Image (cartoon, rainbow, N blue to C red; front, side, top):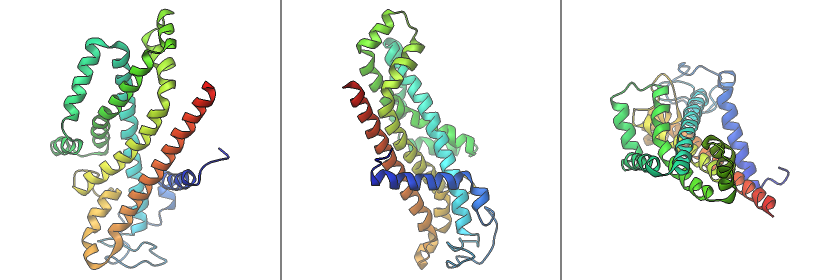
Length: 272
């Protein structure tokens, strides 16, 4: 921990900044989420450090609350996708046979349709609420996690220590959580960072298209949509949330790469 690379340190700083802002949003936001406090698209000032949006709401407050919702939805969807995809992937690798074939073919069927199209179809016929968004995003993304978890688990299940556990009569639950999971953490942790970034971009895209987080709630994609017309007049209100999305994605990616390299080096040292 004393030798954190500069890139990882920068990623940790911005990631912690965004997550702390999301956690303490009600305490640090100067105004309410939907409170109208000025004229349309006011310039940056001491009263409004990022100006106001298309209907006169403080943009800094909208960004803070929008970050809270964006990060919460993305984190919850990522957690759901990893719990579902990892468990099913490990079960398919350990059980094999018809269980593996059924699960894999079902995943192939879901993955044959682009995730965005599937989400748009589902959300167009269901109530668009935050729990529904988390459920749809998490289950669609679980297919990607399943493929990775299964591929990693298949390589691990042929190792001698797994065979020894089987010969000792250990149950499948033991094999999955005590033998396979600890040795599959490195690629899964790295993939978790990428999946979180994808979830942030996914929810932002859905909100920009009108099927994501619904008003009066705010998220960064919705803020871009609300202020996109200002770009024509040289008003940067829509660029602020776009910059936040980009910096969060880069920061999480830097942290995920560092964690992967760190865990890989620790494994190499222990093996030697």
